[in-house]
Amino acid sequence: MAAVLVAVASYELGSRRAMKDLRSRFDAIESTLSDSNFPLNSMVLESLAELTQTELIGLTETGNVTTSTVSLGGGAREQLPELVVRGGSEAAGTPVLFAPDEDAQHYRAWSFDTVESRLRQDRVASVVVLFAEEQVEASRRNAALLPLATGLSTIVALSSLTLWLTTRLVRRIGKLQRRVEAVAGGDFDSPLSDDVSDDVADEIGVLGDTVESMADQLQQLWKQINRQQSQKLLHQIAGGMAHQLRNSLTGARMAIELHAQERGIEDDEGIRVAIHQIELSEDYVRRLLLVASGRQDKDRPASVRTSLDDVRTSLSPIAKHLRIDLTWELDESLAESMIQDGPTWVAAVTNLIHNAIQVSDHVTVKVRSPQQEMLRVTVTDNGPGVPDDIAESLFEPFVTSKPEGMGLGLPVVQRSAEYLGGSVRWRRENDMTVFELDTLLQN
Image 1: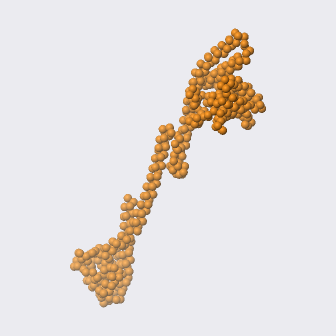
Image 2: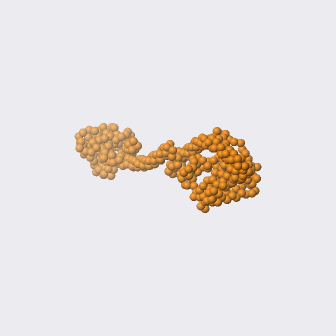
Image 3: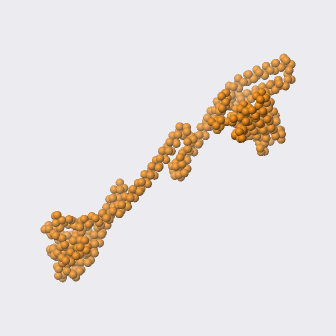
């Protein structure tokens, strides 16, 4: 449509310019011949016709032809008076289409009157100027060619640019659509290409950034939902296990106490350690039951030394039995510092050390304070480390590399650290696996 409009407009503009050019040529001929003193005979008219590329016809006041540079048929001679009446320089409208002969080419005719024609020897009262129709059409085409070429080339350029922009836009929208479909299918990690998102700051780029932000938020929400479901399942499992363990531990403690009474060895060190460990286990099971029911046990503050002694008493026999080199290092300045909840801290540290002695033959436990009011337990072992496939989700429930494991120990450590105002992390350093547990100390 644009090309058609440009062609029509160019043709119209070319026609106007061609007619303007004809008018200018006619005015120049009129100004030269209308008041000329020389006779307008055949020789003069033929010379002027050749110079101006026109055909000239001289007429008397009665419309008779005095001289003509073009041969005229009978019908054409009859039309000449009408041309003089309709034409004329004062009524210069559109030139009249005129055919000197049936077989001759057509002309555009204009006429003008001479000054004081009665005093002229050549008796020429008016002159008819004929412009060849072929020249008019050629002039029209030449005048229309430049705007037509300019308009069409502009259309081609704009169409090419529009096609390129549209193709690029459609491609980017297609990539954005596929990304949204991937997010809807649960794929939150596949990134958008640079030409859709932040490298192009337009509406599509902003929309791409929004989709990426939505994917990140959905991923976090998905992880949170999975974590909540895992915690809910963990509470259910903990409740069921705790009920069974409580009964078994109660029976074991009563059996040991009865055996000690019968043998008269109540003061035996081994018996006391066994009963103490059973009591600690019973307390831990009681806390699991509270967690499973959605309640939290009251905090029982304890000193660092007391809590660490409970861990040593529980794990040293296991390490000795497995022939594990278990080394303890305690900053004595922290020995009497208080922990918000001793049993929670003991459960977290016990899990970290127990995991270490299961996969290595040398474990080091360091207790120190990296900064004021902060207690850090560092557990280092020479085991193979954490497999890459579970490294990022190590502290999630039910994530484990042990065939017989349930993946519940490290989630307990993380929840304990958060409850005590700290955090837990791990790293691989010099072929050693290092876990660090940070908790707050009480004033």
